[in-house]
Image (cartoon, one colour):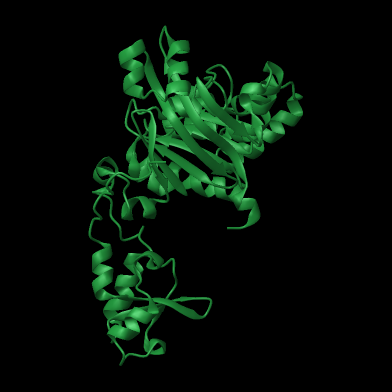
Length: 361
């Protein structure tokens, strides 16, 4: 990972959000005595929306937060731009603690650095597509000609250049979501927050927008936090995924890491039906070169077909079934770093047992 890729733009540190009439007492119990979510409910009749959540979003990364309804994911994302104030913990955006920003500086942070798209895109019905896309800049006092130019550019990026003078009522649901994304892009933010933006759309349009969003975000070099209740969507879009349950982050990692090593039975059940053929890579299933040589001293590595470390299982199946020796060498920068046999390739398709306990962070 290069240096710019590793830069952390959003740093959430032990975030809690507690709702109820006795929140101050509950917060003290959490911070001073380490009270749990169950303790807070039992002792103070307060509901914990988010419980000790920590995560980091790097520059250029699409970070998905996945959980079922009520898991706390929408509360968490609203703390990332302080639409909701945390009860405990910190949110640092570009190194600045949001809780320390006054109203004017917070407004500037949101306007310049953090765009947000909701499931309900909330376009202004009496404004044209162009006017809706430029609305954020209008609120900032940017002159009409300048904001229209920026809005046209954003609408072109989402494929709506021919719809500038139309009104929201004339657009399909997918097109309205594109306008919402264009509105977020018009201010040229570094970070885009997406709260289940595609969940109300038909499956075909939804998949199309997922692919378009990922491609556009990568092309523009944006960072994104994407909320979803659909693991397939998280896998399709995200570079990394955090899985939430009951307000807590249970596991964070790439789709491959989570599928191969689920933190607990809850995560294992979630990933049980996910196909591994395009997710599991050669570097995760190969055996060491020394082990292969010990098992097969008669086979020279340079006679094996080569595969890249990031080749997926689907590609490896094609290679290994055609290989005379029933094995493929994993080659990185001209050097064999491992070997894949038919046996360990088949084992990679078997569901991994859930981890017992362990770190859920």
